[in-house]
Image (tube, rainbow, N blue to C red; front, side):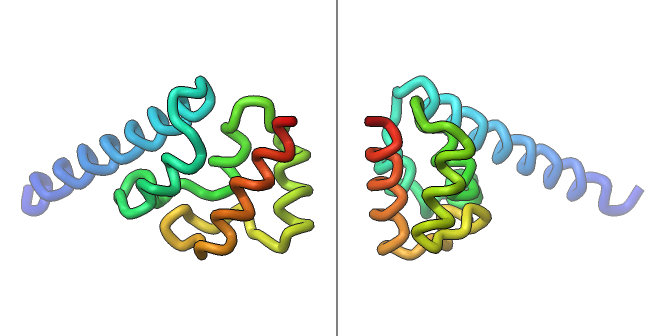
Length: 102
């Protein structure tokens, strides 16, 4: 079947990216990596695709509702990917996480 090899390669690549994103979020939840570490890896295809809201909610001690309210108050959309997040918003998200973990 024509194109089946390309399709299977694409499926393996997509599965690999999903696995990397899951591992990154698990590392963030366990405290092995910091939010700033994740932002520094925003250029990575897998990490850069993670939504800011999911990333903030994965920080230990941050409740989902509090994270969403704080981002809304700061005017930051939780749907923006890590790669597309402006530098100003990155520092604000880190500050929000710090405040919510106190």
